[in-house]
Picture 1: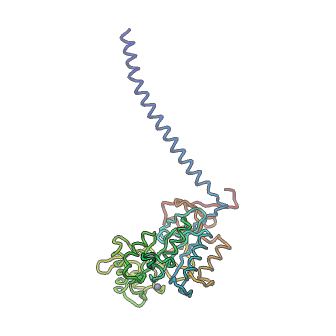
Picture 2: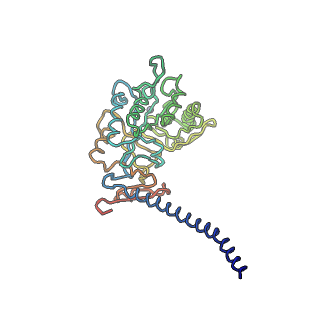
Amino acid sequence: MKKYVTLFILIILALIPLGCSDSETVDNKASSEIIDEDKENQQTEIKSELDYAKIQPNEAGQIMVLMYHSIAPEEGTWTRTPENFRNDLENLYHEGYRLVPLRDVILGDIDIEAGKTPVVLTFDDGTLGHFNYIKKDGELVIDPDSAVGIILEINEKYPDFGTAATFYINSNPFRQPEFAERKLRDLVNFGMDIGNHTYNHMNMSEHGSKEIQKQMAKVQELVNKSLPDYSVDTLALPFGIWPQEQYRRFAISGEYEGITYENIGVLEVGSHPSFSPFHKDFDPLSIPRVRASYEEGYGHFKFFFNNYQKDPSNRYISDGDSDYITVPEELEDKIDMDRFPDKKLRTYNLDKEQ
Ligand SMILES: [Zn+2]
């Protein structure tokens, strides 16, 4: 009997640690599951906390891709003064706009706070007023009145504004050959981009496939001298003119002497805001731009800026969550979800109870 009792005790002793360790594992699992569930609940809560009435997200709304040319002391059709450019940025910031890279718009990857509107800055022709180095007290500094200087200044004042901008260059970017390579590297370090404006600012409709590919590839080659891995992947059509129909595809991709290029976006000249990348009519290879100037008529910055101020319902307003595309219910049929299989569509109707 004693033998059996001992055996029984031994079995119990042997089982206890097993039992303990088993139940511990189960407990661990259970508690980690609870934590996961908690996390999920929290996330759902954060998402459902979106105040639709206050934010009125509209990710089907329009986006201004602003087209600047010279930044120089005298205002004109193709020139903005440093002071006016500074004011443009101040006005944009205070009206809830945030700078986003063109690439993020094209890829539908707009990452800004809920309630804010994306805006894209573009500069054509790579002039000195875009990016100028000057000597100050014997030191080389960025001209505070050049476009780059002003963007950095405003971003320092409002760090959530951003620094995104694309500079469309030709053969002599920013007109200081001695600093050309350094400037291209600096731009990328500042969170800015370099775009193609053809090597000699060509009228693409007047040339055939070889010359178009040469002028496109030579800009890519020039950029790669300072930035070997940088892919110049957007084009601003010089004069807004496409090649002839049979050569049109060379504005998008091609090759010259072993140098290849591939554009994910093509910018035109004027004259209205772009569709949202989620809108079914968005075409990344034909993106319209808004002219940034003192003029107030249709096609110009002030026209759309003032209209959006009066009636924000047409402009893109972010939901602050890049996993979701959020639009008012009546715009649901404008969205092309096929291009964004990883995102979820969310609609709302302020007239109905959420
Ligand atoms: Zn140009």
